[in-house]
Image (cartoon, rainbow, N blue to C red; front, top):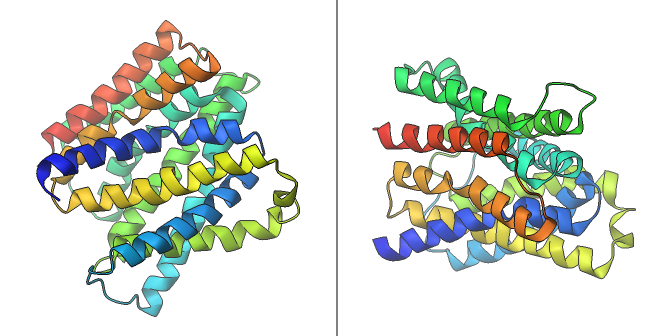
Length: 283
């Protein structure tokens, strides 16, 4: 894959990740069932992609790495359930913007867990994200659906940040696609006991959207992300992935008439600006 194709791949991956909330809402079922169905199709897709990328020379995981991958699967499952809970409560736009707080959590937790020096520009990014989140919701009232949905979305971002840091510490030397396969399989076996009675009752159209979510927004998107990182710099991919909330909000506006307010637009712009500026300044 050359640089031009890698750029197309990462843009497509960002678009697919941005559509996660859309497909989850179209599935019209509970967050647990959405996450469980997503895991089914993600495991199938990632197993296929692992076969296609057999030239990867990743080592076999040790027992310690298997345990950490299982822990990563628990974090991934929690991230999915909380994100789709936010979508159900407050809509795709607020859920997507709340989840976009994960780079701020990553900066703060990375400094604490890995004892790395946090630059002033990164503290500024965290501050901008906090201001952006304050603007996204009209009032901080727990009885307000927008506030409750935003809190679920921020929890989703926190869990994803923890997952990213865990992967940094535990997946060194492993094939990234196979590591994602182990984690998605963990999600599946953890959620199936709670959803096995519910899944057979889903309509055909719900299964279709779950298939789209698992195959394209998980399996294909992750594989494109991994493939592009072999060519592009990490900071380049981070800048492109800052567009993910834009894609999610645009499609929510188009499909569900979730028109963002001026406050939401300003808050979202601050969050995206913070991510973009931090990635550009990263070494």
